[in-house]
Each structure stands twice: as structure tokens, then as C-alpha cells.
Image (cartoon, rainbow, N blue to C red):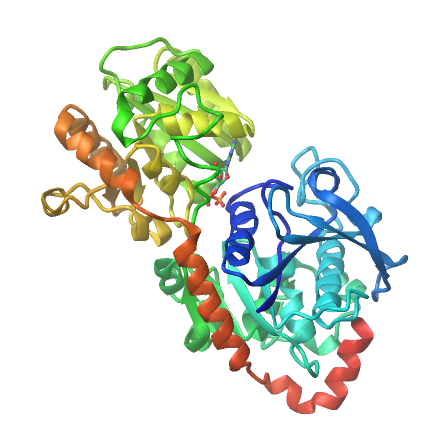
Length: 503
Ligand code: ADP
């Protein structure tokens, strides 16, 4: 199949979270399955400098852009995946992150930036970008690409569209003035289309107009149809539930493999688990913690936001330091969480180590050097870190939600007896429930045979992309054979003219 994969980030070009891991590895897995998949991203400076063999292939005139957008073509590093970068310097050539400036504030022109990106993706999708190539399906990811299915819905000879929700909490909401400035069809400002509580919602473009919606784990696909997880969009998702499914993310074991990982102090496998200890020592050193015989080391890496439940860990600190354990945390995010963690590490320098920042090498060392990985998320669409920690022989402690529920089997009596236990799972969003799980984990840690069984169950589990990529391919085929006609398109003549004008 010819597939266009549109994303606002992809490892190793640019990364803020799990979406980048997926966009950097699923296209590669599809390519290995002999599909013609091409990746398109905004041309951030980091992406330009890391892409391989980049050259200018065309200038595309898009509505709303003062100058033509330059389409650069190259390769996703170390792969056979063709890459397009949408180069509009006034939108993407700036320091800071893809969504936030250097001070951590959202770029004020995010609506214009990702509307332009979506228009460029739509132009490629319609073979209007001078590439002489048209995909049969466009795979859109998260709100930054949400306008694409809406822009394409009523076009004749359009490709099929799939919209993947990596995190429903990020919706791309903008005010009326932004909506007006984007010059989108005025009737999109309605509850049935892109308006959401008096704001323009980019994600609704995907949820309303895509031929199919999926999310990154089967559990999250169920959860988001409920009020507790639906972020106000549960009604729409219930309405579309016949075309909504979940496919668990795979992980890239070329990047995350303790047997070959060059970012570790020492590589190891399930047969040489004793070498894992050298990573623990290196990790303690990196965080300035002393070695303490018999103390398990609990680790966490991730964005410090409410979703991830680190406030529960912070609440537990007075309890945790009474136990014979150490804790290390690597992350950036909400200032109050950063500050609380910093304070804890200053108060208990022998037991708690904290690094505020983004550090890929340290993230790998943390997965390998910790004895237990903490992931008490309130919600978790898929979660990758717990899957990495399974492979690194670092049993995760997780809340039973989303992808965590789909990947971690609790060390209860039945799972231990069956040999399927690989971590610790708790239910309630509360510090007490988390503590109970930590205490169970500490109990198992003192039983070498049980511990070893947990580690090997996790290390031998296979969450590679091969299986998930096959599932995606089956879904792509199903969608492209069976696209929907959105009710809007019955007025096709008018809509088509309108949409062509805004492409
Ligand atoms: P999310 O997508 O919600 O951020 P995931 O667990 O799916 O969470 O993926 C997070 C990815 O980002 C992982 O690859 C993780 O290692 C990485 N990551 C997050 N924060 C940091 C950090 N501070 N330093 C290094 N890597 C990080």
C-alpha cells in the first residue's frame, strides 16, 4: 500500500514523548513489511539537521501562507523510510520545542503552524504537491494533524484517512479569532463539526471526519468512551464506536535492548542478569546517591504532569524514606512537581535523587539500573516506559489503566503460579493504594526466586512492532476498501469548491 504517515514528531528527528517513538518506528516496521510508507513532519531546525540526504523537491502554494511552502525530501535516519519536511521558516524555524517556547509557554501561533502543516499534508495526500505520488491512506496522529481528515473528507478521489489518538487530553483548542484567521469553512464552527465549547478543536477534525479512529491500546479505546476518560468527547466517541479500535504500540527493540544498548554502563541479558548491577551503581553515581546494600532502587522517567501520578509518589515520600529503598526521578514538566521533587532530594540526599531535564542517555540507564519502575498514571493511552522496563528486567509498578493494564500482569498468587506475572498493579488513584503495591513489590524483592521469575517473564515478553504493524496494515486495508461518506459531502459541489479554496 501507499501510505502517508503524518506526525508532528518522530524519533530521532524530534521528540517530546511517546508519539515520536511510534512515528519513528511504525513506518519503519511497515517498510519492512514491504509497504510504501512515507513520513511527513514540520521542518523544525532539529529535524532538518538530523534528516538524511535532504533536498528541495517542490514549492507548494497553500492557502493562508504568505510564501510558498518548501517541501524537502530525505530519509528518516538509518532507515528506508522516505521523509518529507514541510519547510515554512516563519512557522517552524525557531529555537525551543515543537509546541512550546524556551520558557515553556505555548507558541502563540500554534493554530496557524499546525493548520499550515495539515494543509501541506492534505496537498501531498491529493497529489497536489508536485511529488507525482498519491497515498491510498493518510495516517494522521494527534491534534496537530486533526484538520487533515476534515480537509480531505469531501474531496473526490481522496485517500482513506485514519486518525490515531495518542493522548485525548491534548486537543488543540483555539479561540474564535484563531478560527477566523485560519479561513476554514465557516460551517466548521458548529457542535457537529470542529467547535467544542466555543473553541476550535483540531482533534475534532480527526474524530468527526476520519474514516476510522484508533488509539494506542485496546483498554484506552474502551476507556475514552466513558465520562471519566473522554475529556468531554465521550459522546462523539460513542457515536463513532463502530469505527473506533485500539492497537497496542510496539517498541523498537533496536533502541531499547539491554543486550546491545550502548547508552548503558554494562549490557546484559536474561542469562547475565548479575551484570545489571553495574548499571545500578552507575545510576546511583549519576544521581549522587550512596550504595546501600540490599536497598532496592525505584525509578521513574517521564513528563512531570498530572497524568503521570507523580504527586502520589511525592505524597508518599515521608513513608518511603522510612523503608530500606532509594528513589530516582528524571523528568520535566509542571513547576510545582519539579520543585517538590527537588526539595525531597535535598531533604533526603541519601535516598532520593532527582534530575530535572530531558536526558535520553540517563533514561536508558534509569531503565536498566533501577530495580523497580514506578508508573502510577491516572490514565495512560499506552505508555512505553513500562514496556521498556519489562525488557530491562525492571518490574514496573503501575495503575490498572489503559496500556498499563494491557501490558503488566500483577504478581498475584494466580499469575505467579502460572508464570505470567511481570510486575505490580494497583487499582485506586490514591497514595495508599500505590504504597500497598510498593510494599508488595518490596516483599517480592527479598525473594530471589520470585524476583527472578518476574524479571524473566518481563524480559521475554514480545512487544515488538512486528505484530502491531501487521494489525495496522490489516486496518489500513479494511479502511481503504470501505471509506465513509460524511453527511457533509452530500452537498459535495459546494463543499468541494470550499475545501479546494482552502487547501
Ligand atoms: P508520554 O508519551 O505520555 O510522554 P510514554 O511512556 O508513552 O509517555 O513515552 C515517553 C517517552 O519519552 C519514553 O521514550 C521516555 O523514555 C521519554 N521521556 C520522557 N521524559 C523524558 C526525560 N525527561 N528524559 C528522557 N526521556 C524522556
